[in-house]
Length: 272
Figure 1 (cartoon, rainbow, N blue to C red):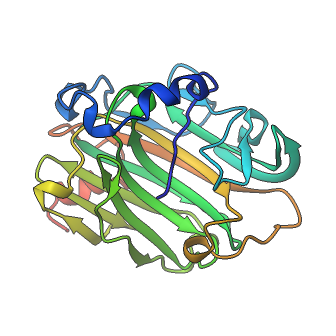
Figure 2 (cartoon, helix red, strand yellow):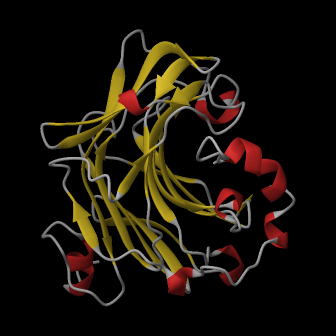
């Protein structure tokens, strides 16, 4: 995905200093074997401020037509809701919601149970990311539902700021916007495997195309007026909308399955 990835207000001041080149950054710093994040399961009885940081008051670049707003992030009925609405805020006419973990996570299994939004020009995402604002190369592993066609989800990865994945569109039975679906990626030193509702949909094994730096976990909904060839022409939803998340989990390599529906359980049982 195209991202400038300005992740906090101070980053506007720092971006110039860090924008030289991801390749100029220390490649050894905080690699995937040095992550501080531990295994967890988040079911959103509340929003744990010790785990999650709420993006507010900025955007990821000129391609994004909304400003991150803390008011578009809420927990309700055991679900995290990430909203998108028409509202003037910080020189943009729409607001949108994003959360990110404070800790960084390395190799392991990343899972979400999510219902995406629909609408041309909108994007519902679950991904790992680290980049220049964190004094790291831009590494990323993605699940993104493009609202122009929520019957599919796109999987992809970035290494050192470059898209190196297949950007494959995988089918989501019944539609990613109609019900909750399970998305998981297993990130290993020599492989990434993406799963939708327990089914393997893509994998990467080329060493040159595998992220290697510990990353934060992100959940977001946003829109664009300019990325029309990828996301479609933006269409105002006409009312506030929100993606919903029932569960997010990370399981470190070799650790036990944390909940019955986890892909970790299925892989250990040999059903995949």
